[in-house]
Image (cartoon, rainbow, N blue to C red; front, side):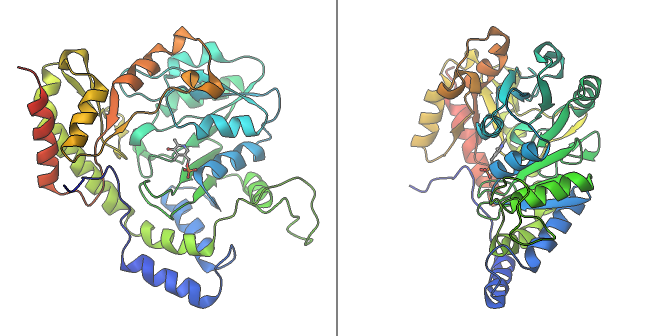
Length: 370
Ligand SMILES: *Cc1c(COP(=O)(O)O)cnc(C)c1O
């Protein structure tokens, strides 16, 4: 039986043409025109001045924290419910991630629960726009300002999403993106840091390139990294960028079809649909639902049944505070734990057809015990 995949990259002729051009030019490594163009155009798309392309979303986050000077003894506020790379990059700096619970209505970090976790060693906060839904940036920026914290947006799952009509990635000191194969646009592996701050941009460029002094080759003032993106990756990214609004529009159409089809189950309290707050434009990176107790079948069993019928799904991230590297007992993070245990992602690729969505809706609906 054919499987309906959870995600698939949409790579076409444009990407191929750019790749051929890059290969023919000989610039296959991390110098070349595609990198500069991709950085400029993606920064412009997000309304930011500077783009610094990286080898992944993870290296983008680490580069951002390193440029801000996050170091040993520092603490960085992160959501409990997110991908582990967020906490890991804090750990790479020798700093400690401090977890904050989810908002019950839209699953991202709850701004009301941030302040109680701030101590004198806290110096940054990483809001993550989870599964395509923006964080409530207004209060987060206010808290950051009151306490003198840096804000590093993690927009790896939310390219093009908007908070109060302003695109994500345009808030805070630095914003970070991933272009991994299953993200909204891809370069295979890849990422980018965006900022309006010229000094930070310069620092990130230097740290990305082993810490080499830009005016004196092979002179190193600091310990840096090799976090560069290749021209081949950027060649793909540049072509993907021309289609980003198309991909987002398609994801929003898919979300609408799921919501229409599954609305009845939500009304009966059996499931919770992927939210979109009135202040948000969600890009539904992966359309997600929560299986509520009333459904009578547990989340993992529902996923198994869908799998048997050829529908690939993905369970939500485990909250970081229950994973071995970050294990702590903290009752203030129970919402994140609860949402994580009920949630999963449905197939959300832009090439998904109407009939496939109908089939997925029908399969889920038929599962309900009458
Ligand atoms: C994918 C992702 C990352 C890491 O990106 P990579 O390119 O896979 O390293 C970081 N944060 C979040 C929220 C992600 O979803």
